View (cartoon, rainbow, N blue to C red):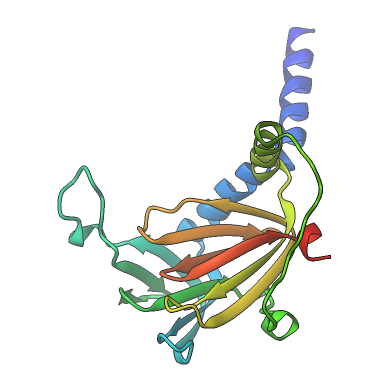
Length: 197
């Protein structure tokens, strides 16, 4: 009887956690480490002109710890990318790395955004709810990405979007409808889709 109860609890826990964005992100990291992700790597200059574009079936993104100034700070801004059997190092210019199934919808949002909200709320409660949604379900969001001088680069949107820190300084990882998006040395604004409607 105890074994059945334990098995039922385990199955129920796996079912509940499978909808959790944090678990999805963990599995995405596992997949990236052992299989690699099929991704597009693009770097840009200050005017948002494409410098290079690389497509790979097995990509791993890491901070190159060789360039840390000391072991405690882990402050290297050098990115080491494993692309199949080859590698690439990058530092400095804006870079967007997205799984190939993510669609850049830049042309749909090329105009500047003017948002006005008169909805009242309780900020501390809203903050807690937003943190919970980021961890478990994600939210409908639009991600506007700009170069370091503010020139628009790319736009992504998703129904289940969550933000995550990475071990690379000046970068952000996002899970967009189950696909990984990595933003490095870019300005960006992430809006709840409801703000833009």
